[in-house]
Length: 240
Image 1 (cartoon, rainbow, N blue to C red):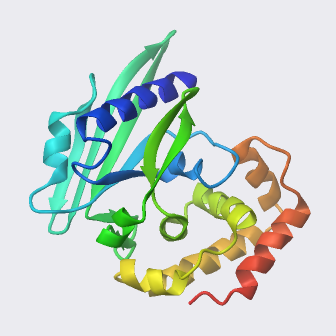
Image 2 (tube, rainbow, N blue to C red; image 1 turned 90 degrees about the horizontal axis):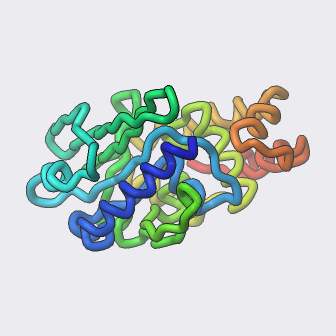
């Protein structure tokens, strides 16, 4: 974990230098690393994910030319308003071979299902926040989405780790402001938000949730009272 994070740290610093502090093209860190801007805990994440604003041409074509040393393109696709590129690097750590990956999502962030689409619009880029996050034991300044946009990303993704992330975010920060309006702006299929939120509530209701919630962050801080508090907040707010 430490070796992988050190490599991600160097990659992030390199990309910042080569893109004029993530402005050419305009981009921001999302996924597990961005979570560190919103809660006091960090969790292990294999990938570093970037959302890239779509303009004329493809930003990922430029990013391909400035990849950090040792990274190569494993997968690339371009479809209309959406582009994706996964870049990987293999490291040696003692006798182990470690894979480090960086994902770039341009124009849209897409999930596993056809309707799981979030548009990376001008407002999302304008409202991004530059924060100093600790990666690999060192502070680095990177842009992350505003809380509302990041919350939407996590709910739409709705993997097991995302559900635990949402619970931690709600406990720390509550429900974002202007959520209903923003969902309609960035989701071509806004109905999926309510459906995914119901899945999240159902999972948090399970008695086994508390142990998995503590486990993913490696803490005993979360309590049964915290689990119930998150449920109450989610259920009393009629989101969509």
